[in-house]
Every structure is written in structure tokens, then in C-alpha cells.
Image (tube, rainbow, N blue to C red; front, side, top):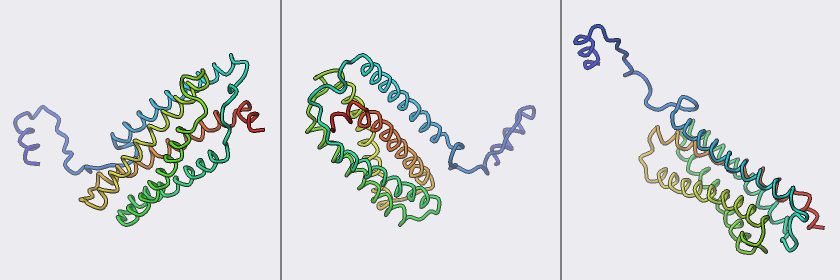
Length: 214
């Protein structure tokens, strides 16, 4: 406050704004970090959209889609999708616990959500290793592997961030700014889940893929 008064005394013509009473941490669209995350989600959504356009372009020019020999183990993929959808619940609770400053709730729900995410990731990697085609087998393989690979990088990144936040919640100190990190981490996870629901519908509910199931 004294510095503000001194500046006003030296430069009386200069407009002075005292911001000493403003909060150091804000939430939602008032937080610059929130806008940073929204911008990142917009960029990554654009990447997914471009890949989906590529998928439909290739599909429209193919006589057979998917090619013969593509594995069609849909039940395990549906079960894994259910696990991912279930993981939204604990991440919502993490965000709510952060609003209440409930440290125990943040720990418990974030661990639960992380475990579900890691289960999904483990099954995804197992399916990767056992896929009947590779990225260089055909155009279908290239676009599907790229879609799955890009989404898997999001899973890995989110899982690492979850583990770091869990460590922070137990080791501390947990500051006000970390509550914002937890809420934004939940927001990012919603994007990871929603993007996979869209990709799953495109790839595994494709009429050509379902025809292979018969």
C-alpha cells in the first residue's frame, strides 16, 4: 500500500489501481490456467477431428472396410469403456472435495479414479499388443493405430499427473493453488473420457466392423 501511495505522490497524473485486496487464486473462467487448459483441449480436439475426417475419407474410398482379418473382440472393449465411464464419478467427487477443502476426500477419490484409469490403460495396452494388424498393414491400420495411440498418450499423461497430485496430497503442503490444479485435472479427465466415447462409436460401432462380428 505504501508503494502505491509513493507512486501516486511522485506521479500525480498517473492513474493508480490498488489490487492488494484481490485474491491470489481464482477458479473457473477467472483463472488464466483454466483458459490454458481450455485452449489445449481445443487444440487436441482439432487433432482428433482431423483424424476422424481422415478415417471417413479413407472409408469412403475403400471397397472393404475394415479389411479382412481385423479382430472383432468387441465385448472386452465395451467392458473397458464401462470402466472408463465409471472413472468419471470419482473425478467429479475429487472436484467437489477440492471445493470443500476436504483433504481426505481428495485423497480417497483421486486414488479411486486413478486406479480405474490405470485399469483401462492396462487393458488398452494389452489389446494393442494383441491386435491382428499393425499401423503399416493398410490404411485402416494406420488411421486406427494413430487414433488409439493419440488417445493413449492422453491417458498416460493424465495418469502421471494423477500420481503426482496424489503424492502432493499425502506429502504436502497442499496450498490453495493446488485445489485449482485438482479441479482442472478433473476437467481434463472429462475430455479424455468424452473423446474416447466418440472414437469408440466411430471405430467400433462402424457398420463394417459390426459386420465382422457376425
